[in-house]
Length: 170
Image 1: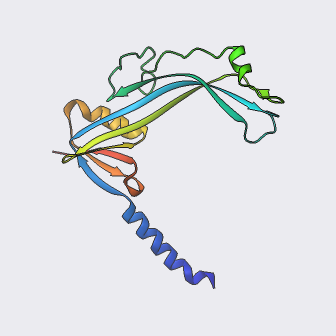
Image 2: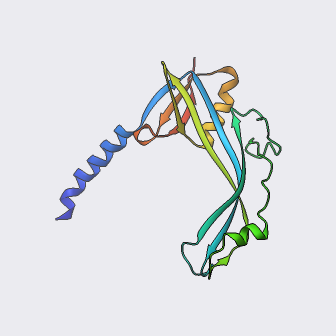
Image 3: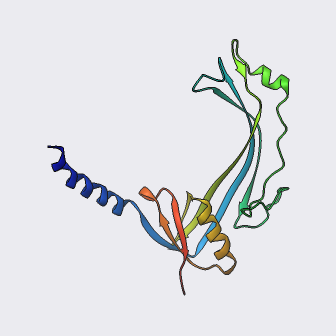
């Protein structure tokens, strides 16, 4: 009885997949990679068995990479992905960590987290869009940017992200 619904489910999913992504050509674009360091500390009644420990964020630093160029304020890099990084934020002191501790909680060791957020800003006509993207798109823009090569962008579901960028042959 359930098998008769399978063709209609497959058709609906195929239609959703085909209509939820689109492409556009952009001649104006800028890719950014926000690199950051953040100190985090875990707090829990039992750090080894509590599934959802409380996370406290301490100091962080960040720098914006644009189109592969060295940003002002970058001190580390370029790394193996050609990204530049900010200075390390100060490690939280024992006093700072203890001040955020609640009664009965255990405290984890401070952890330094590295994070990267990629975005692409592109113009089509008089409209500018900024969407999240990935490392591959960022690298494609870095390669295309010096010659201002037009890019064909493949947008994600509901046009909420840029999934792919390919140079348009002139």
